[in-house]
Image (cartoon, rainbow, N blue to C red; front, side, top):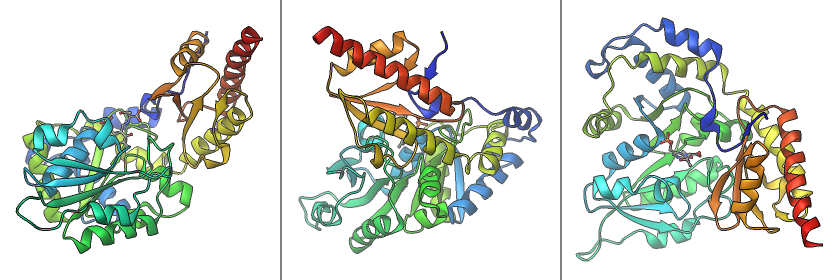
Length: 349
Ligand code: TLP
């Protein structure tokens, strides 16, 4: 039985060109700043995001952590969406390791923060309050079904942060998906942010790595925090080489993942027993509710038939399209899903 793995775009395999570039990469000791391939990747990444500098880090989690450590002192507060990855899925690292107090603001279904609610949540100066040092956005928004924030959304939250002297960080793990969906340069989506991170190891299909981009001065501090959390890497050019290939060859093709996600969403929306708005899918993530049965049972039955999905809690299930998933896989997955929900209907009747 063939497996159609829709759990995440993190399951992607490096392309043949990446493997070649990795094998041939020119390397040096990056803790000394002497890895030419890492240096090149950091320069290319900074330029793509419209920032002065970038630091190559091991993961999206490390990118968010080192950014938060850079913007916040212990005891400072950071405002995040209540469905943000940094809040839900990063082991509470910012508070455990950084002593940062996290305050959540409701995420709208489209992954945005309401600027008025964010403004109200910012602490005013006073002896009883922590200082709000950082506001975080996520683009695309994972738990909100890959929803995209546009330049105006980001600018609205940046204004709130600026009015109160707080920094803005964008967890842009999938910011290139947002850029491709909106047909704008990623730099435009990052303009209002003090730091923006993105992942090479998701839709861009690299084996490892993320980048944090910002001003030269900010990135120097990110580098120091990266060392502090044990993330200084040596001949990391082997990994960075794949990143250079990804930025060159894998960004525009994200549109194929979006088209496949849309095909999937429209197919799922037609099935009884599942709830989603097929038209709301903007990028490569399809999140939906299973109403016909328990979500865990639905997922287990799909798995038995070779279709892997991931769980978002409650009735919600996620499917993610990526490099390696083609239109026929989508049709096959839809046939399997239909069989599972139909079988359930049959048993009921
Ligand atoms: N997301 C993963 C899982 O952790 C859930 C996934 O499969 O989607 N920010 C965002 C928005 C993310 O989606 C992720 C990973 C991260 C940060 C963390 O990246 P890594 O896994 O590289 O630490």
